[in-house]
Structures are given as C-alpha cells and as structure tokens.
Image 1: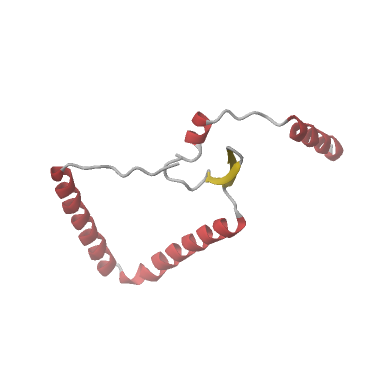
Image 2 (image 1 turned 180 degrees about the vertical axis):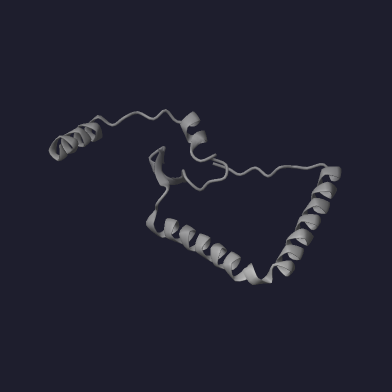
Length: 112
C-alpha cells in the first residue's frame, strides 16, 4: 500500500493556505474566548491519544494480511483511507472459515 500525495495547482495551494490561516485564527479566538473549558478539551485530546496508544500496543483493530508469504497488519478501524472498513470489503472477498463456524455452533449448543 502506498500513500500518494495530492498535487494542487498554484491557485488551489494559495486558497488552501488562506483557508488554513482563517481556520487557525478562528480556533485561536475560540480558545481565548472559552478559557474555562480548555482543560476539558485538552483532557479529551489526551484520552484520544491514550486510546490510540492502547490500539497500537494490543493490536486491536488490525487484521493480518498475507501478501506473497509476508504478514502485514492492516488497520481496519482507524484508517482514514479505509472508510471504516468499507474499502477492505470492496477489495477483498471474505470467505467464512468452516472450522470457525463449526466451533461457534458447538459453543452455542453448549450454552443453550
């Protein structure tokens, strides 16, 4: 898999820079106007980072993908380009594992 950067024209780059500067200015004004809630926003950002750290350490949200005998970990939950797993469903045909289905039916029979 490869990330290809988007190539913008000169006009589009200038417009993007102006838009980014305007957005940063608005965010700065919001921060200064709402100082009392700033610790809660910062805590929310910190918790988000902890969740990403947990995913990285535990491997949660990654699927093993084998390409030519090499195992890769594919982010199927948090990847921006994957559209919450929808791209993977379009690219890969997922086949049910008969042994896993048999184990699930046996465990359901025991629980019933």
